[in-house]
Image (cartoon, rainbow, N blue to C red; front, side, top):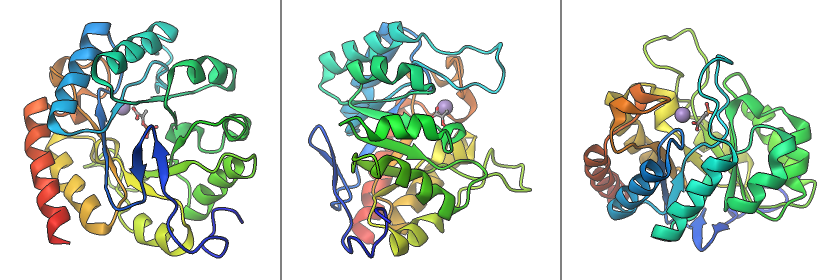
Length: 264
Ligand code: PEP
Ligand code: MN
């Protein structure tokens, strides 16, 4: 299998517009859950860049639990993301929810995000495998690591080798956190695969008071990056407000992560 270490013993370096995952640098991806307005995403980009983030995240297509909740601004949101990139130079990572929108998202993004809910949307994975842009593939909330790696295989087998895995917590009996961060996923994936793997402390913890601890654990366990939800005014975020941290919190956390990286 193409994701297997037997095929390639050393960790693959996935380059996203010059930002390298898997080469020991531990880049941080940050930004709001949703793109709300041009002003909001540009401000977010400026703030996370100033704190040291290397890639801007933000959803223009949102896979919400309720069909009545804000579903994202769609192409308008992609344009706002492009404006934020223009303003700051930060590459963009944004989710594509539907195979119908791959072509559209391709025009704007630097890296596709596949959300947890689409981990086994094989039509979507196959299409992304036929593009030449990197894919951030998030583990499903109920997928085993084996199934996670098999999902990656759908992209790799179509020719696109630039896949970055993301552990974002799995569903367990525990309800204190939104999902249970499966920290073991990192050493297990590193044992089985050459693909880089990053951690999402926001969707796992589900509450902003857990984001720092989980982020530091990500660095300590050997993750190749971290993706964090940050918003200029977290309490006003249109989605995932409870787990979203402020720019001040993010600046502090960046310092703490740097200290952990030096210690391990
Ligand atoms: C997100 O990144 O905002 C998101 C919806 O994440 P997940 O797919 O991991 O739930
Ligand atoms: Mn979110």
